[in-house]
Length: 610
Image (cartoon, rainbow, N blue to C red; front, side, top):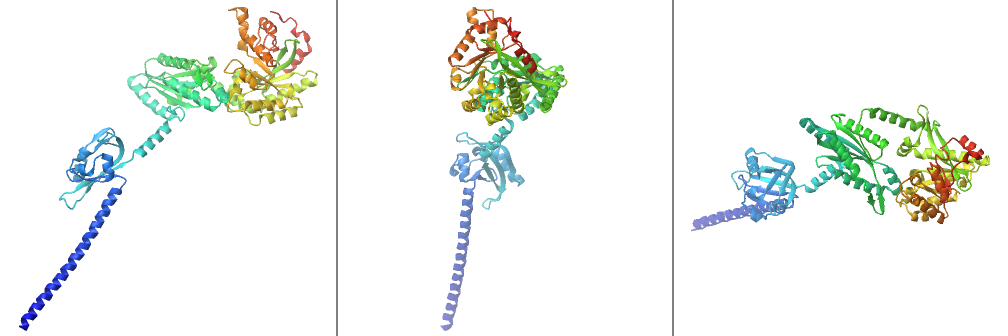
C-alpha cells in the first residue's frame, strides 16, 4: 500500500514537473513570438514610412505587397493590387520606350542580382495618366513562406529634382532676359547644322544682328526700357525664321542667327531683309514709341569659312560694314572687309592713348547773332589729330569713346579746354559763349556739377560764358532727376541748350519742366527750308512753329546746319536768334576765329532777305 502510494506520488511529481517545464517552454515561446511580431510590426511601419514606393512580388511577378507611397504613386490600393500582374500595375517608360516590369522581375529573380535604372525613367499613373519621374530598381528577395525567391521594386519620385536639373540646364544654355539660346547652345546647334550641311551638301548662314544706337535708349530712358526693347526685338526676329533655325543672344544688343538647310546665299539675304523690315514699326514701351533699326552682317558656310568662331567673326565684320554704309542695312561678308576690320582695331588701340598723347584738338564753328549780324558765340567740336591718318572726324571715333567708357575723361578735357579758350577770348575783349555738347553718360555722372565747378574755377571763367548742349532724349529718363541736375548747372551760371528737340519723343511739356535757355533746331528741319516741293509757306511750318514756341517760353533759338542763302534768309524772316553752318563758316582753329572777329567784312554779302 505504501509502495503504491509512493509510486503514485512519484508519477504525479513527474507529471507536475513536466507540466511546469512545458509551461515555461510555452511561455518562452510566446515571448519570442511577441518579439517577432513586434519586430514585424516595426518592419512594416518602416516600409510604410519610407519616402519611396515599395512593391513586393512573387517569382512570377504577381503583386504581394504595396506600401502607402506605392498606393499613392500607382493610384491603386494595396487590397486591389494584391495578386495582379506587376505589368498591369506599373506603366514604366525609359527614354520614351516602354519597360516590361514583369520581365524585369523574372530577370532579377533568375540572375539573383539588382537591376537599376537611375535616369530617364517615367511612370505613368494608370488612374489619371499623370507623369511621374522616378528612380527605379528591382532586387531579388527570399521569402520564408514561398519556396522560390520573389522581388521587391523600389520607385523614388524624383520629379522635383529632374525639374530643377532641367531648369539649370535651360539657364546654362539660354539667355535670362529674352529666353533665347546663348552662345554655348548656339555652338551646339551650329555643329549639328554643319553635320547636316555636309551630308546634304547644303549651305548654312550666320547672321550677326546689332541694334543701332541702342546705347542711347539705355542711357536716356533707362535699362528697364532697354530690356523691353530687347525682348520685343527677339520676338520679332523669331517670327522671321523657321523652326529649324536658331536665334541666339550674343550679349548686350547683339544677336546671332543660324540659318540651316539653305540652297543659295540669297536665301540668307532675304531673311536678313525680312528682319530689317520687321523692326521698322515703332517699339511701344509704356508711354514711349521708339524707332529702332538693326544692322545685319551675313557670312555663309562653306563659302566664307567652316569654323563657327570664324563665321561669327566674319558676320560681325560684315555687320559693322553695314553700320558704316547705312545703319539698318544688310551686308554680305567680303574678304576685303577683313583688312578694314584690322584697321578699325588698330584705330581703337590708338584711340586709347590719344588723350595722354595730346592728340585731341578742338575746333570752333562760329554762331552768328542774326539781329546784330555778328559772332556772339561758338560751338566747340572735337577732332582727333592722328599721327598717321591726319585729322579724324568725330563720326569715326565718338561711338568708340562711348562704348569703351572713354567719353568721361575726354569729355572733361573738352570742357576744360573750351573754358580755357573762352577765358583767352574774354581777356582779348571778345566775351564769346562757348557751346559744349554733353553725352548721356557725362550728364548722369553723380559728381558732374562739382566737376564742372572745379573746371570753371581753374580757368577763372564765369559760368555764363559756357553753354551746355544736352539732347532732349537724355532728359526724358524717368530714373534720373534731370531737372535737379540742370538746376545745379544753372547755379554755376551756365546756360542750358536743348538739342534734337522735335526729332524724337520729346514734347512741349519737357521744355516747361526744365530750366533751359536755348532751343537748338536740328539740321533735318533746316533742310526742309530748301526743299522745292510744296508751297513756300509749308516748307518752313515746323521751324516757324519751333521758333514761336521757344520765344513764347522766353528761350533763344539757334538754327544748326545752315548751308544756303535761302535758308539763312528764311530764318531771319522767322525771327530766329542765332545760326551756324557751312554757309556761314566751317569749324576752324581758334586763331581763325580771332581773324573772323577782327574782320567785320566777313558777313558782308550774305543774303539776309527772302
